[in-house]
Amino acid sequence: MVMDQEGKTMEVGLIELFERAHQYRGLAGELPTQDIAVLRLLLAILHCVYGRYNPQGEYEPLYESEPGATPDAALKRWKEIWDKGAFSDPILREYLEHYEDRFWLFHPERPFYQVPEHKLKEGLVKDPTKYTAAKLNGEIAQSGNKLRLFSSRSGEAKEALSFAESARWLLHLNGFDDASVKPKGKDPEGGKLPSTGLGWLGKLGLVAAEGDNLFETLMLNFTLLRDGKSLWGPGEAVWELDTVRSKERSLIPQPENPAALLTLQSRRILLHRDGNKVVGYSLLGGDVFSEENAFVEQMTLWKKVQNKKRGAVQFIPKLHDPSRQLWREFAALFVNSEELHSPGVISWIRRLKFANYLSRTFVHFRIAAITYDASNSSFNDVFSDGISIHRDILESSEFGDRWIKRIIEEIETTDQLVWLLGQLAQDIAIATGASMKGDQNKKRLSRIAGAAREHAFYCLDQPFRRWLESIDPVNDEPHEASMRWWNEAKKIIRQLGEEMIKKYGIRAYGERIVKEDNKEVAYSIPQAYNRFLYRTHNKETLKGGKSA
Image (cartoon, rainbow, N blue to C red):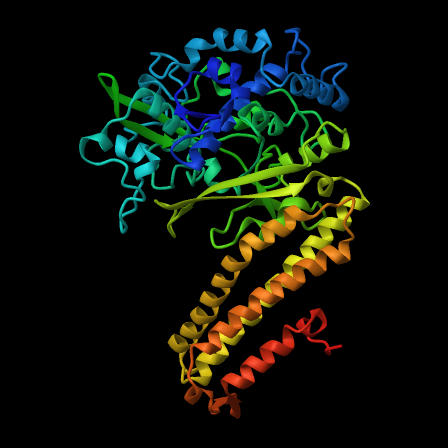
């Protein structure tokens, strides 16, 4: 599903999608997470074609083991395609036509992204779990204790999907399936099979670059170098394999090539049809591999963890927090250090910027994610967010690092301002009679502070994005840019604080004595507000220093 420049959506085949990618605004599936799943399929195709063949159709693989393959050669190939502004090379069509039958949804031996019925019954597998089409359709995914997320379908319409819809949801299911599938097979050697867990994409803090059209979006995410540095090893997409993998819950080595990773089969699936409609599917756990330092994955945030068994410090994918705006994850997005590992796609775009291959002023990044319930057995919600940043801030140099450090400092300052507003809300609640005794009362005070902070971030969200996009790294002076944001953030936070105290009449301004740690402490609205004004006076008082 794509959207044209006039905003109309339409279903197109793979060949048409690639040949007209420059004419489409972008993917336009039913959910942002579905678009990510489809995007990764399209990127896998690009890796299979241009990772092996030059635009003239000559076999010239860009693998680290191939003679003549270098990072510079990979960059030049990318630039040659980018400069054309369209996927106009015959080799792309030839590749898709060669594997045409591997993309058939109901091929008897190689159904697309599925395992044929006779294969499901081989070896370890017995009677896979069966579901209706309603669970395949992520638009109407539901948990056991809440209504469906969306009401776009009802009655018979939710129990049957067209083949085109099913193909998109098949990609989504493989990547984002919950962990409710029950294991069916047993290890014949008596060992323990790996846990099914979430689908691979459900474990990631997904991030992708966005261009002005679908061609640009695909090319910006077409990472021909690992983390913008080194060549990939060889690898095959799932449709290129000689045999279909059918073993349930199979522990595999970390892939060494994006074509293999982007088409990872987290689930063993077989669609069921009735006439020209898909009415259900069978499902088992599929391929899994270690998440630790899996830097073959180029589209996720990372976090540093300590391995309890081996004591080693490693990185694992970091999930997005739906309660936090994306700009608050700025450090995780744009910093590479011993403590932080930037997503590969961002490192790749930095490399393109370093090579002077990006002429656009701003680069836009978008995230999409699903939140699951506490047991990961059903969907709770789907969310998406984005952030735009000046290309020069991405520069891999002291110049770019200085700007990134400055922006992170302003985000930390903003966090402190918001924390103080939450503290004011809590102090006002105590001054007007809220009890501090008992766990329930303490939780209530915590919720009051949390609600104030959540509202503050909501009010700061668009102003911060405008400020970030207003930065001209070449012509702006960092201190002046920082002060622009400080003045605006301070004004917003103080206005919110003023609104809080205006809700109370003069009778609520009296002093209240509260016992804290066997001491009597006086609480009053004027006291709390004056403390708030003092702490938010300037950056020194914010940090606990003295006012100038």
